[in-house]
Image (cartoon, rainbow, N blue to C red; front, side):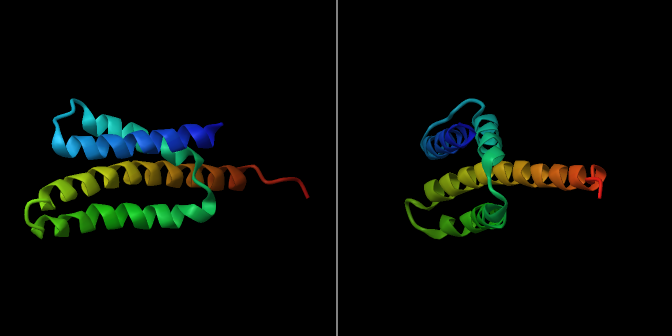
Length: 111
């Protein structure tokens, strides 16, 4: 159930990222962050490095799209906005990993 909610949240984040490139959406940054955070709740451990790499790539690499005539500024905005979604998801996934690691270190099973 949580994976479906997370997938829907990321999809909402993608739609808002695209629409926000063409129209002014009030509180778009908050919507993108919450959508990404909810999306990051169900990230598997093997997918976390890919999520982090994707977030960094979109956030840093989006600036290079600005050189494309006519569409560059829109593409930059779309990819930067979706990079915000992935960054929020990556932060939540890392926080969950750290919580689980700490929990496992503090509560060791009896031998």
